Length: 186
Ligand code: IMP
Image (cartoon, rainbow, N blue to C red):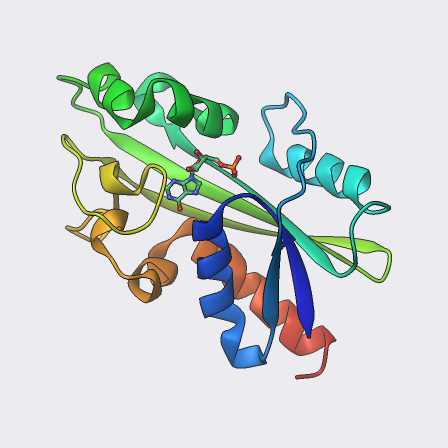
């Protein structure tokens, strides 16, 4: 089965492909921009995105929205993570966190799947801490500065398989995988 993934992020496509490979699912990237509404909720952003896209792109399709929420910064950059990454970047975040003791943060991922005229949402959260310096070369985005709970490595020091076991997206993907198995009778 082919599922279209509406995203410009190749890193996310690789994580999805790796995870859903055992089900024989082929993820086809479709770089088609869609509006991301201003909202504090990733779920709302995803629901709106699906509604906007459903008559414009082939079915079944998925979109995914994620963000990094830092406790000391009251949840910033959160739903603005992509914009903040492009502007102040990792160095800007590390600067804001200079000398800060409470380094707790979490990543959240919301996958929206549109299939047979219905939307399904799958959510994953991973808690961790912001490192004091950038480490690692794998992955994308904030991976070099995020250390998930129970690990010493940043996400950028992990292979895709390792990261998928711990990451917010991996957890959302696990729920999505379960749903596909049950509902598509694999
Ligand atoms: P969006 O989901 O495409 O809006 O991206 C949200 C922002 O969070 C982007 O800047 C990503 O780079 C970042 N982000 C989302 N997931 C991850 C991840 O697994 N690792 C590192 N950064 C991520």
